[in-house]
Length: 179
Image (cartoon, rainbow, N blue to C red):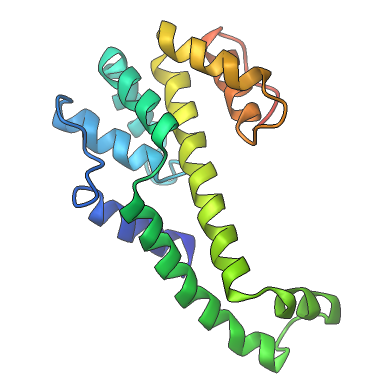
């Protein structure tokens, strides 16, 4: 399933997954939930970011919790289910060799369904946590900075670049490193 279709499914199901956090104004909850499930604001061009900035103090604990916990089990299960379907859709062109070079065909055919689903799940979790980090870079706060500094020092973390970028943003520097 294309990423945009998966995003739409997750956004529509977000309340059922318990993503919407109690105590936040509705506008902040909706914007934060949407933020976590996107990696760009195509069509929104800064609108979501402006809402996040409007609710900085209220959103700091929300993004810290999402960074720590990651997506819900239900969200991960939805991504896994969609990944199984996506893998099945990919098999026809692989079997036909339609439009793939020989090396690409060999690489695609070598990946099992389990490997594909695992990769999609792990990518989703990292993207989700990266968005929480970027959210922390918008809302700031002392706890956000402390969490970002820890991640920025962890050279083995796939989230290090996002943390460095968010720290640069909070310091008023134009982010020029990492993701």
